[in-house]
Amino acid sequence: HYRLSIAWPRILPQGTLEASGGVNQPGLDFYEKLIDGLIELDIEPFVTLYHWDLPYALETQGGWLNRDTVDAYEEFAGVVFGAFAHKVKFWLTFNEPYTFLRQGYSEGVHAPGRCSDRGKCEEGDSFHEP
Image (cartoon, rainbow, N blue to C red; front, top):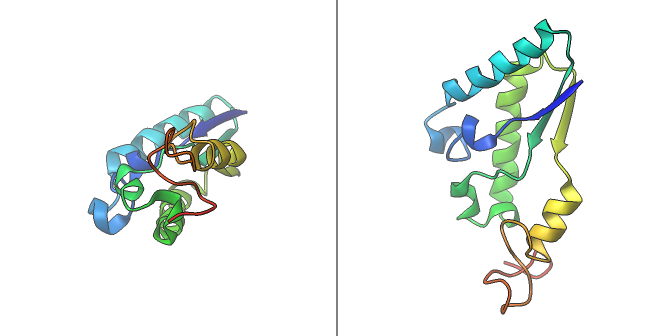
């Protein structure tokens, strides 16, 4: 088995199909070559869709605190599933969700650095913001 993450910005640089002007085909081609290489070597790919790499354009619009990001993630997942579902059996939706949510949106020690202590973080936390 081999776990890999597909970088959302590599597939949809601006976060959505419309904003990105469609799929970044060289990005999909990169992962297709990687997945095909693993399968040729009889290695089962386990694919993670989100590994803390939110497209910057979505972060500037509020990131995961903006409901539109959830819709954009659904679109991104659909693109990736459409490209690789016939090759990949095992999918992980989020890498370490507790860590990126707690430490990124409550404690502010990971991106995007949100917390309630304005002396530590310029942005607010997910319990009270936006």
